[in-house]
Amino acid sequence: AQTVTQSQPEMSVQEAETVTLSCTYDTSENNYYLFWYKQPPSRQMILVIRQEAYKQQNATENRFSVNFQKAAKSFSLKISDSQLGDTAMYFCAFMKPVNNAGNMLTFGGGTRLMVKP
Amino acid sequence: NAGVTQTPKFQVLKTGQSMTLQCAQDMNHEYMSWYRQDPGMGLRLIHYSVGAGITDQGEVPNGYNVSRSTTEDFPLRLLSAAPSQTSVYFCASRSDRVPGNTIYFGEGSWLTVV
Image (cartoon, rainbow over all chains, first blue to last red; front, side):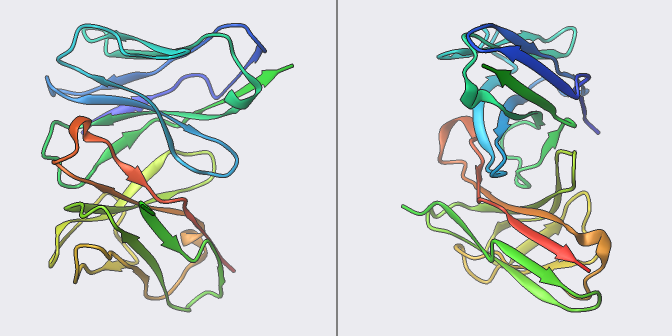
């Protein structure tokens, strides 16, 4: 079974600065997907960024980028130029290879990020 | 295009009552699933379906039933509600036809059992 660990329950950052959220995972699979989801107070699950394990290049989406270290089983999220709207819970999630009929995402416990003005 | 729609958004139940959380998707996705999120935790899979007429258990299935009579609908039934089922419930769908294994979530249903 897969496990996902987020070791930072809470973090804060000043507006416009950069922050990195940590995530480690444990799996015996060689091919898989990793995700970061943002959950604002409304509880909506918003996909931030996705990484496919067979791709060596780190994924980037505007101000969001990841540092994917497959050998170390590490998947950190970097948020650049932090904005007040980035304040939310952030969940790291692992997904087994394609044709995963159960949509089974294994989630970490989350990191609560507060962006301060 | 509504995506994944859940009803109700909020519900308060008494212990022992039964209820059904509704989920509908209009994207013709093969796969649908239900997750629950307890305070301070990530989501955990309750039940899932790979198509009409086919369902299976996830990580935390006890106390819940599901059925999938159509591609669009995947209701979650609580047969005899318990306070331990107080949680936020998310329905999700996915299709192999959509690149990237994107999972589409509903907006959540907040359930309190007193």
